[in-house]
Length: 265
Image (cartoon, rainbow, N blue to C red; front, side, top):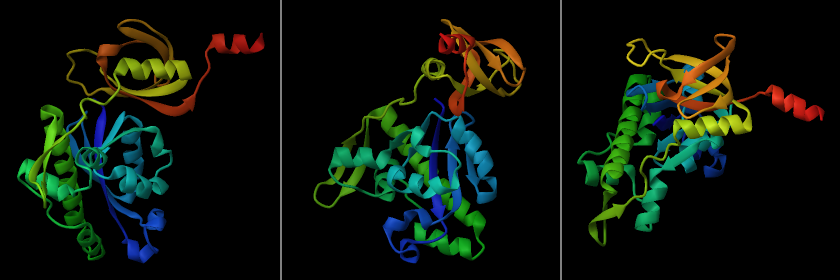
């Protein structure tokens, strides 16, 4: 699964920007991320957003807590492409569907995992302004870890837990499983739409060498491989699907010779 779990910290609070209607003005200090393909937790500052965008480009699913209504719209002005094109799993929406109302990440984490948050978002703003950047990154990545662990708990067991005033501790049935599309589906969709893909590709099955990142225009797809123009090699190559670690579409379009011929008819 080529998914990432994200969380952000902001430069300002809602009072400073005139309310939630000006969410796009909050600014971003840190984006915390867990990347499934590398099993790594990473914190990005603004100066590192180009690397952040590269990882986004290769992602098939964004996972987070309240990211549809907060993290994504706040982050969007700082990213060069439309984040709306990604599949999103928002754990808060799933919890609200199952429970009938919203509860906090801290509540869910304490009830389900036995561990809660280490602070509040408003505190992180003060920490950043006080020069405590590492503390903000640590706080942000802890939220990422809690979100990932909640997701994994629900995926494995089919439920998570919450503490409520009226009913005590309750079980919330969740629907998420492996929501990421298969590599084969990503390839098929890219060919159909004539969109260049970006893949992390292992040259050999048993090689310890890290996969290489390649841009490819797909020409044909068979049961276990596909043929396409490799931008890195500058020519047509055959790629084995089982050697693809991750794949994602880009915003670049291409044409095949058949397309050109058809347009001339």
